[in-house]
Length: 163
Image 1: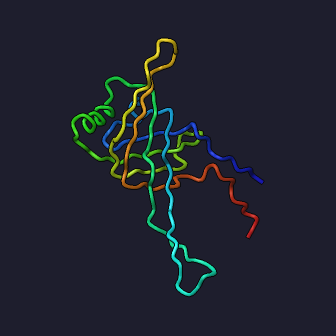
Image 2: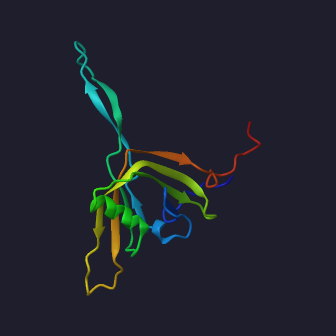
């Protein structure tokens, strides 16, 4: 019987609609976070029935921003997009795709963020005593995201002998 191997979290890629893809340094990040969604519930107490209360789902809540972290990139088209929004208050929402990759660099899962635009840009502190690179953190607000399963290559093969 084949074993299940969960995908690794260090092999991923980020693509922005309208920006170059592939080997472009603008889409390389060391960390992606904010891939969370939740459904809150509302409690309703039924009149005359005191033993329990009803719980109903509320709309889906995309409660956190998409956060991308990388080494600071000089002359970046992506950062120009951020500067236009933050410094010039000129927003150009776009679609962002985050892909978790397998060992052949093919997408296993994708998360597509719709109507995304920048809301925060942070540059790490400059410190003469540390030998670290300067990192920038970019926070992006979005309307919603969808998750798509691209491949099942990390799943064990189906057993054809079972009915």
